[in-house]
Image (cartoon, rainbow over all chains, first blue to last red; front, side, top):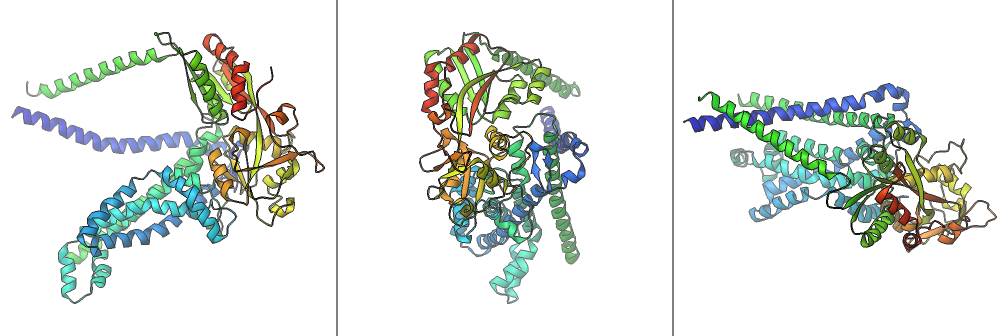
Length: 297
Length: 299
């Protein structure tokens, strides 16, 4: 009896500690970011931060081109990966025969483990020249190239999570729909997908999170020119993202300099943006659940 | 007793962790410069331009002084000097001279950087092999990179847009190019790179893009220029002379975009570090400089 009591005590404490440490680590990271980044708001005048030129070795700290660059690439990646990912998930979960499913699912998961630097190489050597030649652009190192590769990176995440969500929809829903005379397609579009909506949405948000935080690939293929995106043509021009800026410049800066603080301010911006994405996703998911509960009651 | 046992577990594990920490700390103190076995370590870090040269030197030196271990890493001139300031390396490699602020920072840390010119390097201007342009003046290069010239036809080429490629801002080559080509060496010239200049984070990124893009122009250390890229002859005046970069044109001070490469030590070097630097400046080591496409320092 004593033995059981003992191990139970230790295990409960360990689980508790693990749970609390997640919260602790996130708040420590945020405190660290704030401490290192907030001095930039005092050292750099606000009009400079909101200007259009980023050239830190001459004290130009305009962050708008970097924020704009990240947004353009991420939105582009989402537009590419969302329809592709969700339709792949529907195919694997609802349409593909059992044997194909058994092959496809593990393959998608292997794709998720592909190192991003490899995709970057693929981007430089294959995708960028193709983009330049087919669209007749001055250079292939553009936001579009970055978006294509980021789409490929976030695709496996979206497929995997969305497929799990579709799979979790009870078989009775589909049977009921088919029994009412709905076709296979109508069942998928009107019953299964809406029932799995919150899971599919989580999949998309996770994919977008993966895309906005990705560094190596965008650093290699987007050209890193800090141009403020204006209009649709920005998609076929080079851009510079926040992540690539931090990665490229952090190694060089003197600890505690204005440039160092500015890079951490970019870090804070990135943190806040991904927080907003997550909160938005969470609120939509919760609203969805409430409505479902209302229907069931 | 039953109540006490969990507490006893906590104390035992605490003791275990503490003793582990103590043991690991006594190990880490041994890992300083001179290990007891008679080996000595030299940490060498900095400029990506020099990294291949520094590796070749380290390899050659170790084959004839096997008891000396030299570890070489890149990262950029700024990274090497920052490490020297923080006291984590013995020798910093730099493709530019140390800045006044960096020197002040080092002295605040009680370190006096001592400079050695270990080799010379020419910055080659490179384009796609099919680009018909053969020569450019410094003024044309400055106008191209600052965004005043945007089409190859303005400098005698085909009707194509110019795509400007540059190294990232943390590269010593970038700073050198800014000061000596864009600003033509004029101190009060505040010309900046055109905003749409692509900043690539490696020499390989630049050569890969130029190899497949006939619109592109780029620059890189002479040691990194491969056969399948076209090098442009550079001059000051439109009437010439235009000179291609080579060991001879650099040492005769004819090629306009050439620079010295540096090593910095923390204080006057002594012992193994002094011997290593003296060897680097010897003819044997300077032969390696020539092999790698850089320009040796004349004795």
